[in-house]
Image (cartoon, rainbow, N blue to C red; front, side):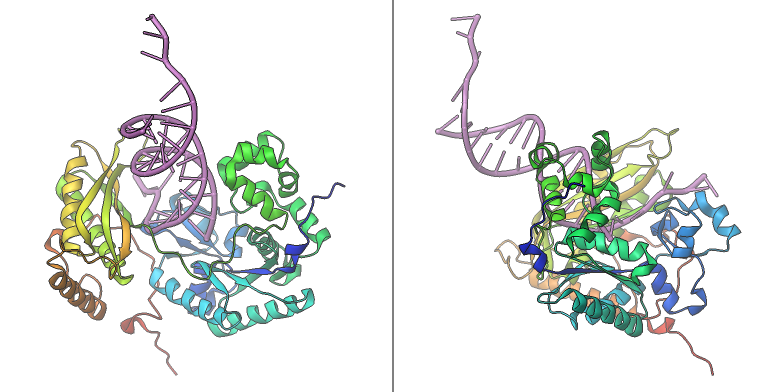
Length: 431
DNA sequence: TCTGGGGTCCTAGGACCC
DNA sequence: TCTGGGGTCCTAGGACCC
Protein backbone atom coordinates (compact mmCIF):
# COMPACT_ATOMS: atom_id res chain seq x y z
CA UNK A 1 0.00 0.00 0.00
CA UNK A 2 1.32 3.41 -0.90
CA UNK A 3 2.24 5.57 2.06
CA UNK A 4 2.04 9.32 1.87
CA UNK A 5 4.99 11.34 3.08
CA UNK A 6 4.71 12.45 6.67
CA UNK A 7 6.59 15.37 8.05
CA UNK A 8 8.55 13.68 10.83
CA UNK A 9 9.69 16.75 12.59
CA UNK A 10 6.23 18.09 13.19
CA UNK A 11 5.15 14.77 14.65
CA UNK A 12 6.92 15.87 17.82
CA UNK A 13 4.23 18.48 18.27
CA UNK A 14 0.98 17.56 19.97
CA UNK A 15 -2.32 19.35 19.69
CA UNK A 16 -5.27 18.02 21.65
CA UNK A 17 -8.83 18.77 20.67
CA UNK A 18 -11.25 18.56 23.57
CA UNK A 19 -14.84 18.37 22.41
CA UNK A 20 -17.86 18.06 24.69
CA UNK A 21 -20.13 15.13 23.81
CA UNK A 22 -23.61 16.27 22.67
CA UNK A 23 -22.87 19.41 24.61
CA UNK A 24 -26.30 21.03 24.96
CA UNK A 25 -27.91 17.69 25.81
CA UNK A 26 -25.18 17.01 28.37
CA UNK A 27 -25.81 20.41 29.99
CA UNK A 28 -29.49 19.54 30.41
CA UNK A 29 -28.51 16.20 31.96
CA UNK A 30 -26.26 17.78 34.58
CA UNK A 31 -29.34 19.30 36.22
CA UNK A 32 -31.68 16.46 35.47
CA UNK A 33 -29.85 13.15 35.97
CA UNK A 34 -33.01 11.21 35.24
CA UNK A 35 -32.23 11.97 31.60
CA UNK A 36 -29.05 9.87 31.67
CA UNK A 37 -29.29 7.10 29.11
CA UNK A 38 -32.48 8.58 27.64
CA UNK A 39 -32.73 10.09 24.17
CA UNK A 40 -32.59 13.92 24.17
CA UNK A 41 -32.68 16.52 21.43
CA UNK A 42 -32.15 20.27 21.64
CA UNK A 43 -33.83 22.61 19.17
CA UNK A 44 -32.51 25.70 17.40
CA UNK A 45 -34.01 29.13 17.98
CA UNK A 46 -37.69 29.35 17.17
CA UNK A 47 -37.85 25.62 17.96
CA UNK A 48 -37.01 25.08 14.29
CA UNK A 49 -34.37 22.40 13.80
CA UNK A 50 -32.62 19.66 15.73
CA UNK A 51 -29.17 21.00 16.64
CA UNK A 52 -28.06 18.54 19.31
CA UNK A 53 -28.80 14.86 19.73
CA UNK A 54 -27.72 12.59 22.52
CA UNK A 55 -26.20 9.26 21.44
CA UNK A 56 -29.54 7.58 22.05
CA UNK A 57 -31.32 10.10 19.82
CA UNK A 58 -28.74 9.60 17.08
CA UNK A 59 -29.39 5.86 17.28
CA UNK A 60 -33.05 6.52 16.49
CA UNK A 61 -31.96 7.96 13.16
CA UNK A 62 -32.73 11.58 13.99
CA UNK A 63 -30.49 13.70 11.81
CA UNK A 64 -28.55 16.83 12.60
CA UNK A 65 -30.24 19.97 11.32
CA UNK A 66 -33.49 18.23 10.57
CA UNK A 67 -36.66 20.32 10.99
CA UNK A 68 -38.40 19.48 14.24
CA UNK A 69 -41.82 19.08 12.69
CA UNK A 70 -40.52 16.36 10.38
CA UNK A 71 -39.37 14.11 13.22
CA UNK A 72 -42.12 14.83 15.71
CA UNK A 73 -43.56 11.35 15.19
CA UNK A 74 -40.29 9.55 15.88
CA UNK A 75 -39.79 11.77 18.90
CA UNK A 76 -43.20 11.06 20.34
CA UNK A 77 -43.06 7.36 19.67
CA UNK A 78 -39.71 6.93 21.37
CA UNK A 79 -40.36 9.32 24.19
CA UNK A 80 -37.47 11.57 23.25
CA UNK A 81 -37.06 14.50 25.62
CA UNK A 82 -37.09 17.82 23.74
CA UNK A 83 -35.53 21.13 24.84
CA UNK A 84 -35.55 24.61 23.34
CA UNK A 85 -32.00 25.97 23.36
CA UNK A 86 -31.01 27.74 26.55
CA UNK A 87 -27.85 29.67 25.72
CA UNK A 88 -27.60 31.29 29.13
CA UNK A 89 -27.16 27.82 30.61
CA UNK A 90 -24.87 26.43 27.89
CA UNK A 91 -22.67 29.53 27.86
CA UNK A 92 -22.14 29.32 31.59
CA UNK A 93 -21.39 25.58 31.51
CA UNK A 94 -18.95 26.18 28.67
CA UNK A 95 -17.06 28.69 30.76
CA UNK A 96 -16.70 26.15 33.55
CA UNK A 97 -15.24 23.56 31.19
CA UNK A 98 -12.79 26.07 29.68
CA UNK A 99 -11.61 27.16 33.11
CA UNK A 100 -10.83 23.58 34.02
CA UNK A 101 -8.83 23.20 30.81
CA UNK A 102 -6.74 26.24 31.62
CA UNK A 103 -5.56 24.36 34.68
CA UNK A 104 -4.05 21.69 32.44
CA UNK A 105 -2.19 23.86 29.96
CA UNK A 106 -1.68 27.60 29.60
CA UNK A 107 -1.94 27.15 25.84
CA UNK A 108 -5.68 26.88 25.28
CA UNK A 109 -7.57 28.11 22.24
CA UNK A 110 -11.28 28.27 22.89
CA UNK A 111 -12.55 27.37 19.46
CA UNK A 112 -16.29 27.25 20.03
CA UNK A 113 -18.80 26.91 22.82
CA UNK A 114 -18.00 23.22 23.20
CA UNK A 115 -14.49 22.80 21.80
CA UNK A 116 -10.95 23.82 22.65
CA UNK A 117 -7.50 23.13 21.27
CA UNK A 118 -4.75 22.49 23.79
CA UNK A 119 -1.12 22.64 22.88
CA UNK A 120 0.78 19.86 24.65
CA UNK A 121 4.52 20.01 24.20
CA UNK A 122 7.17 17.57 25.29
CA UNK A 123 4.93 14.63 26.13
CA UNK A 124 5.70 11.05 25.13
CA UNK A 125 2.84 9.09 23.62
CA UNK A 126 1.98 7.01 26.69
CA UNK A 127 2.19 10.15 28.84
CA UNK A 128 -0.21 11.88 26.48
CA UNK A 129 -2.72 9.12 26.96
CA UNK A 130 -2.52 9.25 30.75
CA UNK A 131 -2.70 13.02 30.82
CA UNK A 132 -5.70 13.23 28.49
CA UNK A 133 -7.56 10.59 30.45
CA UNK A 134 -6.95 12.65 33.53
CA UNK A 135 -8.30 15.79 31.81
CA UNK A 136 -11.37 13.90 30.74
CA UNK A 137 -12.05 12.53 34.20
CA UNK A 138 -11.59 15.91 35.84
CA UNK A 139 -14.03 17.69 33.52
CA UNK A 140 -16.62 14.99 34.15
CA UNK A 141 -16.14 15.26 37.88
CA UNK A 142 -16.02 19.03 38.24
CA UNK A 143 -18.41 20.22 35.53
CA UNK A 144 -20.45 17.07 34.94
CA UNK A 145 -19.79 17.18 31.20
CA UNK A 146 -18.49 14.16 29.24
CA UNK A 147 -15.82 15.03 26.67
CA UNK A 148 -13.83 13.29 23.95
CA UNK A 149 -10.19 14.05 23.31
CA UNK A 150 -8.22 13.59 20.11
CA UNK A 151 -4.50 14.26 19.80
CA UNK A 152 -2.54 14.80 16.60
CA UNK A 153 0.40 16.81 15.37
CA UNK A 154 -1.84 19.29 13.54
CA UNK A 155 -5.30 20.66 14.22
CA UNK A 156 -6.77 18.78 11.29
CA UNK A 157 -5.31 15.48 12.53
CA UNK A 158 -6.51 16.15 16.08
CA UNK A 159 -9.99 16.64 14.64
CA UNK A 160 -9.78 13.23 13.00
CA UNK A 161 -8.48 11.69 16.23
CA UNK A 162 -11.36 13.25 18.13
CA UNK A 163 -13.82 11.86 15.64
CA UNK A 164 -12.41 8.37 16.21
CA UNK A 165 -12.50 8.80 19.99
CA UNK A 166 -16.20 9.61 19.74
CA UNK A 167 -17.07 6.91 17.25
CA UNK A 168 -15.25 3.97 18.74
CA UNK A 169 -16.01 3.04 22.35
CA UNK A 170 -12.78 1.06 22.62
CA UNK A 171 -10.87 4.35 22.88
CA UNK A 172 -12.71 5.26 26.06
CA UNK A 173 -12.91 8.86 24.93
CA UNK A 174 -9.23 9.47 24.14
CA UNK A 175 -7.49 8.80 20.83
CA UNK A 176 -3.82 9.58 20.30
CA UNK A 177 -3.01 9.73 16.60
CA UNK A 178 0.74 10.08 16.38
CA UNK A 179 2.16 6.89 14.89
CA UNK A 180 2.57 6.70 11.13
CA UNK A 181 0.66 3.43 10.71
CA UNK A 182 -2.21 4.59 12.86
CA UNK A 183 -2.51 7.86 10.96
CA UNK A 184 -2.63 5.92 7.71
CA UNK A 185 -5.39 3.69 8.99
CA UNK A 186 -7.32 6.63 10.38
CA UNK A 187 -7.19 8.56 7.11
CA UNK A 188 -8.31 5.49 5.23
CA UNK A 189 -11.44 5.16 7.34
CA UNK A 190 -12.26 8.88 7.45
CA UNK A 191 -14.79 9.82 4.81
CA UNK A 192 -13.89 12.88 2.80
CA UNK A 193 -16.82 14.96 4.05
CA UNK A 194 -15.69 14.32 7.63
CA UNK A 195 -12.37 16.08 7.07
CA UNK A 196 -12.31 19.47 8.79
CA UNK A 197 -12.66 22.18 6.15
CA UNK A 198 -14.17 19.94 3.48
CA UNK A 199 -17.83 20.80 3.34
CA UNK A 200 -20.69 19.77 1.14
CA UNK A 201 -19.55 21.47 -2.00
CA UNK A 202 -15.89 20.43 -1.87
CA UNK A 203 -16.68 16.82 -1.03
CA UNK A 204 -19.11 16.67 -3.93
CA UNK A 205 -16.40 18.05 -6.18
CA UNK A 206 -13.80 15.56 -4.91
CA UNK A 207 -16.10 12.58 -5.25
CA UNK A 208 -16.36 13.31 -8.94
CA UNK A 209 -12.68 12.41 -9.06
CA UNK A 210 -13.22 9.29 -6.94
CA UNK A 211 -11.70 10.86 -3.89
CA UNK A 212 -13.90 9.46 -1.15
CA UNK A 213 -11.70 9.31 1.94
CA UNK A 214 -9.02 11.38 3.64
CA UNK A 215 -6.23 9.07 2.51
CA UNK A 216 -7.12 9.45 -1.15
CA UNK A 217 -7.23 13.21 -0.70
CA UNK A 218 -3.83 13.23 1.00
CA UNK A 219 -2.35 11.35 -1.96
CA UNK A 220 -3.58 13.79 -4.60
CA UNK A 221 -1.01 15.85 -6.44
CA UNK A 222 -0.40 19.01 -4.46
CA UNK A 223 -0.36 21.25 -7.52
CA UNK A 224 -3.71 19.89 -8.62
CA UNK A 225 -5.17 20.54 -5.19
CA UNK A 226 -3.83 24.07 -5.19
CA UNK A 227 -5.17 24.75 -8.67
CA UNK A 228 -8.63 23.31 -8.06
CA UNK A 229 -9.21 24.01 -4.39
CA UNK A 230 -7.12 27.08 -3.72
CA UNK A 231 -5.02 27.74 -0.67
CA UNK A 232 -7.75 26.34 1.57
CA UNK A 233 -7.51 22.90 -0.01
CA UNK A 234 -3.73 22.98 -0.03
CA UNK A 235 -3.67 23.79 3.67
CA UNK A 236 -5.94 20.92 4.54
CA UNK A 237 -3.79 18.52 2.56
CA UNK A 238 -0.59 19.70 4.22
CA UNK A 239 -2.20 19.40 7.64
CA UNK A 240 -3.13 15.79 6.90
CA UNK A 241 0.54 15.19 6.13
CA UNK A 242 1.48 16.51 9.53
CA UNK A 243 2.60 19.94 8.35
CA UNK A 244 1.00 22.41 10.68
CA UNK A 245 -0.58 25.34 8.84
CA UNK A 246 -3.09 26.34 11.49
CA UNK A 247 -1.52 27.25 14.80
CA UNK A 248 -3.12 27.14 18.22
CA UNK A 249 -4.19 30.76 18.66
CA UNK A 250 -3.85 31.78 22.24
CA UNK A 251 -4.94 35.36 21.81
CA UNK A 252 -8.32 35.72 20.22
CA UNK A 253 -8.15 38.12 17.31
CA UNK A 254 -10.43 41.14 17.47
CA UNK A 255 -13.99 40.60 16.33
CA UNK A 256 -14.79 42.04 12.91
CA UNK A 257 -18.55 41.91 12.81
CA UNK A 258 -21.44 41.32 15.17
CA UNK A 259 -24.84 40.10 14.08
CA UNK A 260 -28.30 39.68 15.56
CA UNK A 261 -30.97 38.08 13.43
CA UNK A 262 -34.05 36.01 14.10
CA UNK A 263 -36.82 34.22 12.29
CA UNK A 264 -40.29 35.30 13.29
CA UNK A 265 -42.74 32.92 14.88
CA UNK A 266 -45.16 33.86 12.09
CA UNK A 267 -44.79 35.77 8.82
CA UNK A 268 -44.80 39.57 9.12
CA UNK A 269 -46.41 41.66 6.41
CA UNK A 270 -46.65 45.20 7.61
CA UNK A 271 -43.81 47.65 7.92
CA UNK A 272 -44.65 48.65 11.48
CA UNK A 273 -43.96 45.19 12.83
CA UNK A 274 -40.86 44.85 10.72
CA UNK A 275 -39.57 48.14 12.09
CA UNK A 276 -40.32 46.95 15.59
CA UNK A 277 -38.37 43.73 15.09
CA UNK A 278 -35.40 45.61 13.65
CA UNK A 279 -35.48 47.99 16.61
CA UNK A 280 -35.30 44.99 18.94
CA UNK A 281 -32.35 43.47 17.09
CA UNK A 282 -30.62 46.86 16.91
CA UNK A 283 -30.94 47.25 20.63
CA UNK A 284 -29.63 43.77 21.24
CA UNK A 285 -26.68 44.05 18.85
CA UNK A 286 -25.66 47.39 20.40
CA UNK A 287 -25.80 45.78 23.83
CA UNK A 288 -23.63 42.94 22.56
CA UNK A 289 -20.83 45.18 21.31
CA UNK A 290 -20.97 47.25 24.50
CA UNK A 291 -20.31 44.05 26.43
CA UNK A 292 -17.09 43.73 24.44
CA UNK A 293 -16.20 47.42 24.70
CA UNK A 294 -16.52 47.90 20.97
CA UNK A 295 -17.98 50.57 18.75
CA UNK A 296 -19.17 50.19 15.16
CA UNK A 297 -18.75 52.44 12.16
CA UNK A 298 -21.12 50.83 9.70
CA UNK A 299 -23.91 48.30 9.54
CA UNK A 300 -26.15 46.37 7.27
CA UNK A 301 -29.81 45.53 7.67
CA UNK A 302 -31.48 42.66 5.87
CA UNK A 303 -34.95 41.17 5.46
CA UNK A 304 -36.08 37.98 3.77
CA UNK A 305 -39.17 35.96 3.04
CA UNK A 306 -39.53 32.23 3.69
CA UNK A 307 -37.56 30.53 0.91
CA UNK A 308 -38.90 27.12 1.93
CA UNK A 309 -42.37 28.17 0.90
CA UNK A 310 -42.24 27.56 -2.83
CA UNK A 311 -45.81 28.75 -3.36
CA UNK A 312 -45.18 32.29 -2.21
CA UNK A 313 -43.28 35.00 -4.07
CA UNK A 314 -39.84 35.56 -2.65
CA UNK A 315 -37.92 38.70 -1.82
CA UNK A 316 -34.75 39.40 0.04
CA UNK A 317 -32.69 42.50 0.29
CA UNK A 318 -30.09 44.18 2.41
CA UNK A 319 -28.71 47.67 2.72
CA UNK A 320 -25.38 48.93 3.88
CA UNK A 321 -25.50 51.97 6.13
CA UNK A 322 -22.84 54.25 7.48
CA UNK A 323 -23.06 55.59 11.02
CA UNK A 324 -22.19 59.25 11.50
CA UNK A 325 -19.37 58.25 13.81
CA UNK A 326 -18.26 55.03 15.51
CA UNK A 327 -20.73 54.26 18.27
CA UNK A 328 -22.37 51.60 20.41
CA UNK A 329 -25.33 53.79 21.34
CA UNK A 330 -28.59 51.84 21.01
CA UNK A 331 -30.56 54.93 20.05
CA UNK A 332 -28.30 55.82 17.13
CA UNK A 333 -27.99 52.27 15.89
CA UNK A 334 -31.72 51.61 16.11
CA UNK A 335 -32.55 54.90 14.41
CA UNK A 336 -30.29 54.19 11.46
CA UNK A 337 -31.44 50.57 11.24
CA UNK A 338 -35.10 51.59 11.11
CA UNK A 339 -34.30 54.11 8.36
CA UNK A 340 -32.62 51.27 6.50
CA UNK A 341 -35.47 48.82 6.79
CA UNK A 342 -37.90 51.45 5.50
CA UNK A 343 -35.78 51.70 2.36
CA UNK A 344 -35.69 47.99 1.60
CA UNK A 345 -39.23 47.10 2.65
CA UNK A 346 -41.51 46.19 -0.22
CA UNK A 347 -45.21 45.94 0.26
CA UNK A 348 -46.99 42.67 -0.46
CA UNK A 349 -44.49 40.14 0.85
CA UNK A 350 -44.61 37.86 3.85
CA UNK A 351 -41.33 38.35 5.72
CA UNK A 352 -39.87 35.50 7.74
CA UNK A 353 -36.60 36.85 9.03
CA UNK A 354 -34.69 40.05 9.57
CA UNK A 355 -31.37 41.02 11.03
CA UNK A 356 -28.61 43.54 11.59
CA UNK A 357 -24.87 43.18 11.21
CA UNK A 358 -22.47 45.76 12.63
CA UNK A 359 -19.15 46.24 10.82
CA UNK A 360 -15.88 48.08 11.27
CA UNK A 361 -15.69 47.37 14.96
CA UNK A 362 -13.04 49.14 17.00
CA UNK A 363 -12.17 49.23 20.62
CA UNK A 364 -14.22 51.97 22.23
CA UNK A 365 -11.15 53.61 23.71
CA UNK A 366 -9.25 53.66 20.42
CA UNK A 367 -11.39 56.18 18.57
CA UNK A 368 -12.22 59.47 20.16
CA UNK A 369 -12.71 61.96 17.37
CA UNK A 370 -13.96 65.51 17.59
CA UNK A 371 -17.18 64.48 15.95
CA UNK A 372 -18.50 62.54 18.90
CA UNK A 373 -19.14 65.55 21.10
CA UNK A 374 -22.08 63.75 22.66
CA UNK A 375 -20.07 60.72 23.66
CA UNK A 376 -19.79 61.09 27.47
CA UNK A 377 -23.52 61.59 27.79
CA UNK A 378 -24.35 58.67 25.55
CA UNK A 379 -21.84 56.45 27.35
CA UNK A 380 -23.28 57.13 30.76
CA UNK A 381 -26.85 56.63 29.56
CA UNK A 382 -25.96 53.28 27.99
CA UNK A 383 -24.08 52.26 31.10
CA UNK A 384 -27.15 52.88 33.26
CA UNK A 385 -29.35 51.07 30.77
CA UNK A 386 -27.08 48.01 30.83
CA UNK A 387 -26.82 48.02 34.61
CA UNK A 388 -30.56 48.16 35.10
CA UNK A 389 -31.19 45.43 32.55
CA UNK A 390 -28.48 43.27 34.09
CA UNK A 391 -29.97 43.67 37.53
CA UNK A 392 -33.67 43.45 36.80
CA UNK A 393 -33.64 41.27 33.72
CA UNK A 394 -33.08 42.05 30.06
CA UNK A 395 -35.46 44.49 28.38
CA UNK A 396 -36.61 45.94 31.71
CA UNK A 397 -35.66 49.26 30.16
CA UNK A 398 -35.99 49.56 26.41
CA UNK A 399 -36.55 51.96 23.56
CA UNK A 400 -40.12 52.82 22.62
CA UNK A 401 -39.38 51.73 19.05
CA UNK A 402 -38.97 48.17 20.27
CA UNK A 403 -42.68 47.91 21.01
CA UNK A 404 -44.48 46.10 23.79
CA UNK A 405 -46.66 43.33 22.50
CA UNK A 406 -44.40 41.18 20.38
CA UNK A 407 -46.29 38.14 19.21
CA UNK A 408 -43.91 37.70 16.26
CA UNK A 409 -41.09 36.82 18.63
CA UNK A 410 -39.42 33.45 18.36
CA UNK A 411 -40.94 30.34 19.83
CA UNK A 412 -39.20 28.82 22.79
CA UNK A 413 -41.71 26.48 24.25
CA UNK A 414 -39.57 23.82 25.88
CA UNK A 415 -36.85 25.79 27.57
CA UNK A 416 -35.25 24.55 30.77
CA UNK A 417 -34.54 26.86 33.74
CA UNK A 418 -31.38 28.98 33.82
CA UNK A 419 -30.05 26.90 36.68
CA UNK A 420 -26.73 28.67 36.97
CA UNK A 421 -27.31 32.25 35.88
CA UNK A 422 -30.58 33.39 37.41
CA UNK A 423 -31.38 33.56 41.11
CA UNK A 424 -35.09 33.00 40.72
CA UNK A 425 -34.45 29.87 38.67
CA UNK A 426 -32.06 28.16 41.04
CA UNK A 427 -32.77 24.54 41.73
CA UNK A 428 -34.61 23.90 44.98
CA UNK A 429 -33.42 20.92 46.98
CA UNK A 430 -35.91 19.34 49.35
CA UNK A 431 -34.87 17.03 52.14
C1' DT B 1 -49.24 24.81 10.38
C1' DC B 2 -44.11 24.22 11.56
C1' DT B 3 -37.26 24.58 8.22
C1' DG B 4 -31.48 28.43 13.38
C1' DG B 5 -27.96 31.89 14.24
C1' DG B 6 -23.39 33.88 14.32
C1' DG B 7 -19.03 34.04 12.70
C1' DT B 8 -14.46 33.92 9.38
C1' DC B 9 -11.85 33.58 5.25
C1' DC B 10 -11.12 33.44 0.27
C1' DT B 11 -11.95 34.63 -4.49
C1' DA B 12 -13.57 36.66 -8.69
C1' DG B 13 -14.57 40.61 -10.84
C1' DG B 14 -15.19 45.57 -11.28
C1' DA B 15 -13.35 50.24 -10.75
C1' DC B 16 -9.65 52.90 -11.03
C1' DC B 17 -4.95 54.42 -11.86
C1' DC B 18 -0.65 54.99 -14.44
C1' DT C 1 -9.78 51.33 -38.25
C1' DC C 2 -6.93 50.50 -34.54
C1' DT C 3 -8.65 49.61 -28.62
C1' DG C 4 -2.40 47.62 -23.59
C1' DG C 5 -0.95 45.83 -19.50
C1' DG C 6 -0.24 45.68 -14.89
C1' DG C 7 -1.15 46.92 -10.37
C1' DT C 8 -4.23 47.97 -6.22
C1' DC C 9 -8.34 48.29 -3.75
C1' DC C 10 -12.98 47.18 -2.72
C1' DT C 11 -17.09 44.40 -2.58
C1' DA C 12 -20.39 40.72 -2.99
C1' DG C 13 -21.02 36.20 -2.68
C1' DG C 14 -19.69 31.58 -1.67
C1' DA C 15 -17.86 28.14 1.28
C1' DC C 16 -16.79 26.71 5.55
C1' DC C 17 -17.10 26.24 10.71
C1' DC C 18 -19.81 25.39 15.17
